[in-house]
Length: 156
Image (cartoon, rainbow, N blue to C red):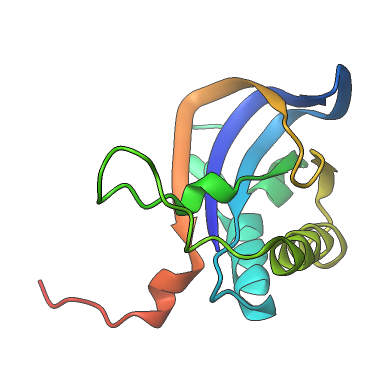
């Protein structure tokens, strides 16, 4: 799974003219599910994101997590995070999970973030055409890939 995380002052998602999710002071999370992903990937990313220290403390240092600041998360499904642009100019999405698996892991990730980590979560609508409004804070933007932990590290 890939998560593109943005620290935001506020963020909202609109589908068919209606706001389906809106937060202030938290994380906008675009979540992509790959065809090799499993519930373990959802658990890993939820735990990592909940503990990620990317909010400023009283000294202005990124030292606090979303849990520490009582922030919220806006989670939006984003299969295009698995775009493969190596050949030609049209992205291939063959590495993206089929909708059934993607929906299952997307919902599992949301449930884990909310129930296990106590984070208030708002969402978009899975597989819908959405408009996302983001007021980035910092800006702070981080990409997490659950599959990176499965690959051996290079010796530098």
